[in-house]
Image 1: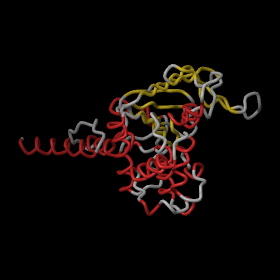
Image 2: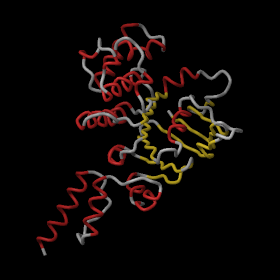
Image 3: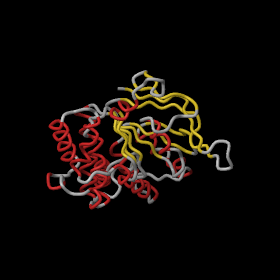
Image 4: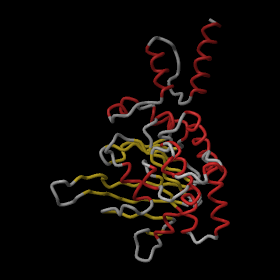
Length: 286
């Protein structure tokens, strides 16, 4: 499945003193089987853009296509769109409303017209995938912690078995173990199910570890695009946009400033460890 945005733009409160240009005309493609990260400072247009992806925001200019079908054309089933392109908001409480979690997570499949047995099976599988066991089924979503609410909201979207999952700050509120488990689940969904995943995140470490491709937004425009290694090699440009580098990249840069001859393109702890050990080994051999 391919989601394609062509020449899309968006302006809030047009024609009023509050007029704000949130997105300038831009193109974007999301493909099945890839993780695309959208990064940018607050106000760069990320949230506006992802809400176009499942039809919540209609672009002022341009079009949104799902497998070459214009999603805003007359007669297009946008309810189907929202089951194929699942969106998890930054604030999960916006998506939780039922009396208990199993009903909440089952809501999407029920709207797809599935029978109760299938709905429950999907809901339980989705809950398990985000670390919510059977003991959570009867709990009220409003009694959960922030991290648990986020898991429940993601489960509710996963239960619809979307082809593309769009998540805004996916690991916000999770402890380190929960964060690792959820990122691993995203990798599994990509690799085993071929799901396309779009993440919006301020955590450069998570982006570096998970993304295949990064688009950097600045003042409503796509100002940079590439692999994590390509994007994070442009540290000064990212800094000018109010963004940082992954922690391990910053560490290696500091070591290089101190005269340690390390390569600075590592993105993960494992890569940084390998590079530091390489330099230590070389220094012992001299």
